Length: 210
Image 1: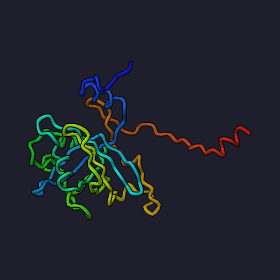
Image 2: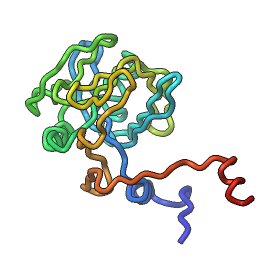
Image 3: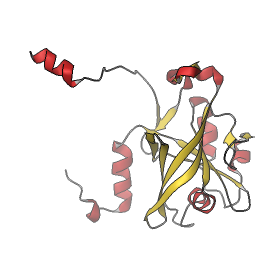
Image 4: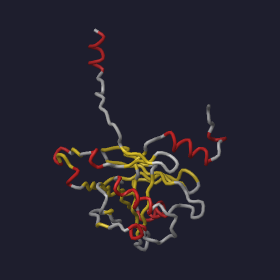
């Protein structure tokens, strides 16, 4: 079946995208408002988009009551944010921070999480998270009514020592991180059975044919 999205209700479009593009990593995002108040919220329209320079992309859908979500507004106002990754051990606390709390409430305090100082940006990291990215707003593109695509440049990556295999070579124990990802509805997933594939080269491809 074909869905022509200009003729499809937005709620149906969301379900089609969210249920088919899986799994999606979770950007547990911490921002500050203009007054310095902390906001934390998870978003799953997120991924890495480059390494030189290091770029992440974060899609934040609008709120029916507020318009721009607090995270989006804060990023556009201050130009800074921190993305924290979510291990299985923190999913319940992450879920608490997704609450539709009133503007100005500190979700980190609500979830019993610890704010840790960042080096290059004002928003704090989540101390309990195994990986945190300090980011500045490289560009923010308003893609729809109160919907924004944030393109962030990563200034620093914090990884807890216990998850590093070889820091000098940039080797991370990905499986040990035990990160969760978003699927659809209220669903989440964790890495189950990873497997390796060797990327082919044109030379090897040609050698096999000769």
